[in-house]
Image (cartoon, rainbow, N blue to C red; front, side, top):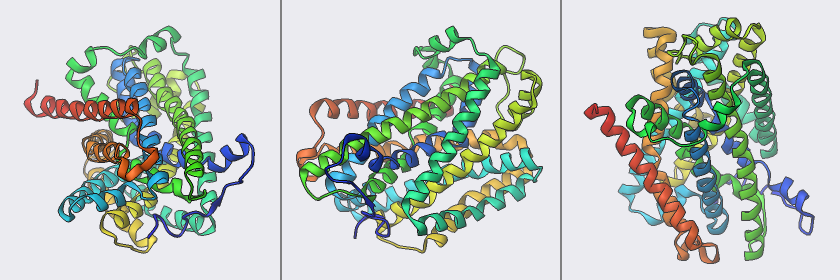
Length: 430
């Protein structure tokens, strides 16, 4: 059975058309992937990093984004060349026990991501409309209706809504950057990596959170599936063209995620770091302080609107990712509304408990922790992806060239090593 059978091969590709028309036909999946790289979990880690450490962690955002571009291009390559998404490829290659274990780990990652989206959207509703956090968390379950409605009317509608929300987020932060007046020289130096990030335990924890929020494991499964919504021909020439355009699509889309994540951290660094507000880590605190520090109420309103767009945007891909991994790993199909409801309940229950017990103060640490959970799960998606795309039996003529193999394995090892170092720092206390 093909991946996402209800939308598989439903987006036409004009054969014989020029470069730009074909690029537009393939544009879309990259932006669905990119929204996961700018969700409320990113906001929490970027705000905390900017407020505490200034512009230093910009280098982590940049490196994480470059890793994401490489890994997402491999996911697209796997889906198009083999006709199997990453979860299906795992089921094909591994034992039943290993496949189930990988599925459980991926479901944990999706729940952690969904937790960030639930909390972020609830915070935005609270800031804009005064809705209590607990009620806001419960209201987020209703977005399943939006997802089902759009998917029923065509995959292009889902992509169009996602792009529209991304533009709203980017526009909001462009204005925020103008209002915060950051030190451009300090911003430029922040993109230079420093060894201090590895030796400072607090800085490393936030850095790994940024990595987990940027390179998201379930996005690799998602991308390997949704690139197959394009109706390319089953020939090597057509597949090669599809891989090329899919890679361009994801690279351009992820550069928009780089801008937004960097903008959040830069705004936090310019507004809070060195002004007596270095301890700002909660999104709500940032919202309350933006207007008095920047001298206009528009700053806080734009911040909350962008946060709401971000939370709702990321939820659109959660349904698809959940469906892909469940069907791919264990070949189990559920009705989309039921699958979404199960995923949401897994995220809503801990979110309701934390917000009921600790209120706004508990949401910031919860968001950052969710991103660290994502990062810890990441190697279990990255290593199979690199292995499969480097296997000539699976990929045929589209197997990774040697330089891509070396680079991809290096990225996989670095990610695993950083996570091991984080666990050591966290539990040994060094």
